[in-house]
Length: 355
Image (spheres, rainbow, N blue to C red):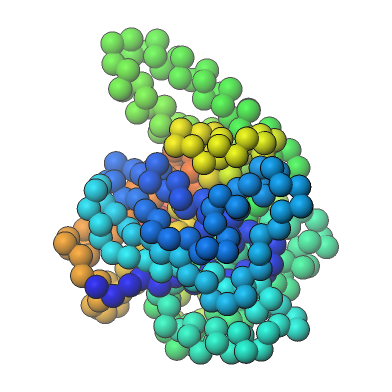
């Protein structure tokens, strides 16, 4: 079976390694179609344990080592208990794409980048005009690398992840405020369906995403973010090929947990550690690549025990659920197709799920 290859590109400090570390909990984020990811390996120099020790502050002087080569981690896409295909994730060192970069590594990236199935660009959330200028410069360089790949292989989806949204001012209140509203609605639904707890839970799931994203919306709906996203969408719109792209907001640990210093609360199965956005970004990227291959008549080399069209539909369905249940951002107040943060959007799959 050929492997599915995903490359992460981002400057040092953008949170690429943390983001990939958060994928260790993807199996708990499955939708009703049962699509999930299981990690086979994480690169030895930046293990998930070390990554989240640093996040939890247990080692005051601990530093995540800089990736000095093309590091790879391995995952398997699953449906239920069935393994569908393996995914190799390449994490590019930040210095390789920065000013004064290691030319040898840079040339290695450019020589291989068009052989990847997907590219995921990671930018740290800008909180002021100076940070925006820095983010725009970084994004321009990331798009320069991506352009080399897309010129040779336009079937590569280009996902942009605006990361570390939990570090923005007032973000600590997002979880507490949304949890309070969700708890109130939960009690109302239990009273509404006294003899059908399952129906109450299902209806709550349909509401909780919009509740959470009402709190996230002020962080998304602002001038800095729109200017950053415009830079990305200009590249998509002005390309001669129909390049699939989408923007996601992400946090490796989610909201409301950054003040907890117990590492086990991030690693235990039933912990408060709930990544936001990264799960959907990763699965959408796979979905977009498979959908692009199908619509362009390109046969997939993946040998799986189910029709590829069925897998695409199952991915789409579970992605929809990730949005609805509050594990990825959408605009709860405007579902118009022209709104780039709508849940459904047919414009180059820019923000929604439906093709």
